[in-house]
Length: 383
Image (cartoon, rainbow, N blue to C red):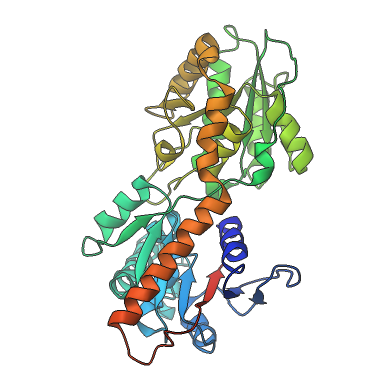
């Protein structure tokens, strides 16, 4: 979400005045737009800060902020990623609900009441939003299920950093060993990434296939996953690399045969799209994913990767074996060509077009005193 907000701001700032409202620290020089670290991450308090800024239109990069669309002084367009509306965390809820949800007894029930309250506020906000943008057909379907009265939902997928499109030949490696790569946060809150499932799948393949598996990323779940790998007897073929430099990451892609991230989904936790699949394709690497969430918008089964029906270990193992048998079916040029449809320039331009067209329609139908002769001063915020 943060990467996407930055890329959109950089693009729009080329032709319009942009103000970015955020929480925490963000360097302010060299971007070409104004940065205000004026948010706390809760809608009630942030409403005051946002209404102090004179803009033509807001672009909310966290869906929860749609809850205040009706009471913002200026129109709002909201981008929905997935979990930010399935389980909203920035929508302010009454103090008593927050207090009761922290007690050991009955906390789950009160937490659900907090979520219900937040969803109710968002439902009202969605009706007042100028437009809803989202990242995939799966997320759009979830939005339309939850907000059936909202018909103006436009899919604007995210993009891929240009550094992944470097043109280089694959390095010669030991073809008797299948080299797998995963790039992911290793956090308890993102267990949907399903690194555990991949490790258990490799345990099933130990006597069948020679594999080298590199995992890039860090987080509070890394130690648990490392221990699981050791307990499964995979320490000789699985390496946890932590965070790596861009140069090292590109080198890992260069060596990889297959990128593996078969995510899982639940009612409150879903992989909205999957930029990493396109990053792998841009490097000429096919991917293995599951049909959960928005991955099917980012991966074409049999052409840019393998899409599994489920993300259970036996299915993952079967998918890896399928790739080992038919890896020659995936052509580097075809992978890179597909990924080129998702550059940040294309992605950000698509969102900019939606902002401008929505603002034009609003000015034609909305209050007469809006400054229709001015270029939009687009204020984006992300938490």
